[in-house]
Length: 133
Image (cartoon, rainbow, N blue to C red; front, side):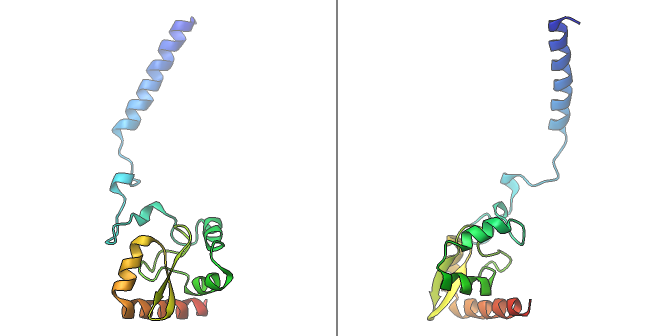
């Protein structure tokens, strides 16, 4: 088979596969369709839950030992309580009515400070749930 015939054949096969891929819709969300939370942050971009433990561990290591202990006791964001602290980088420490509170990102900071009583109630629940585990 000549080189030009092989090239033509490869082009035809590749074209069929490429056009087939383009005509099928992907069941996975695209960046454009990823959900954006009410705080304006795209939490879908980041690991949430137990996957990515090494990233979480690295992010938590950026905190002081005292802050890390507090953040680990809280485990999840005070606002987005399904967002694992450390899944979006080092957690942010806030002072809410004299108590340390951790949030997953800058977008959650204003919400936590806007509703301090609700934030402290959420943190207390998170700590209680995590102490049982």
